[in-house]
Image (tube, rainbow, N blue to C red; front, side):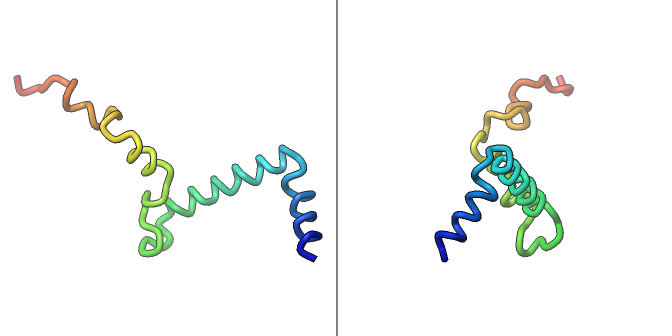
Length: 77
C-alpha cells in the first residue's frame, strides 16, 4: 500500500520537471507569504522566518545599509 501511494506521488509531482518546479516555487512563495504575514504575530513574528532575515544575517556588515555611515559624507562639516 505504501509503495502505491509513493508511486502516485511520484507520478503526480516528480515525474514531470515543470510540475515539480511549479510545486517547489508555489510552496516557497506560500511559505514566504505566511512567514511575513501579520496574521498571527505571536506564532510567527514578522521577518523572523523569512528569507530576507536569513540573507541579512548571512551578509551582515556587507550591505549598503551597514556601510552607508562609513562612506557618506556628513552634512555637518
